[in-house]
Length: 81
Image (cartoon, rainbow, N blue to C red; front, side, top):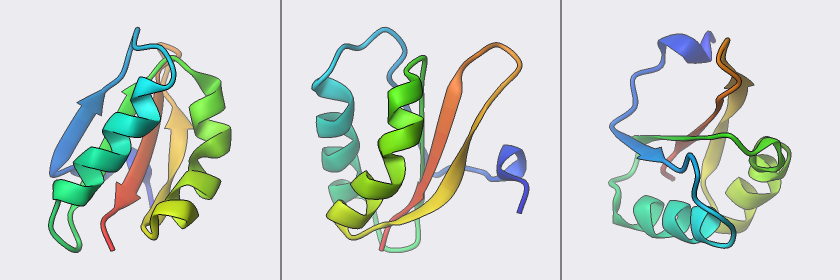
């Protein structure tokens, strides 16, 4: 699956937002979404890319994957369980 072609139902722009807000906002956003909807979280923090599998499992959602684009922006794609 090419994640660059996945269309998100909701995009959460976390560029410039400091911890702990990105995981808190991601969690609350996923909680508000319907089953099967796609959330794309974007930001500059490489830590989010590494912690995404743990975070998805902890929240009980599915991580479709993550990638870094040509501008150095990280995209993490979740599917609401």
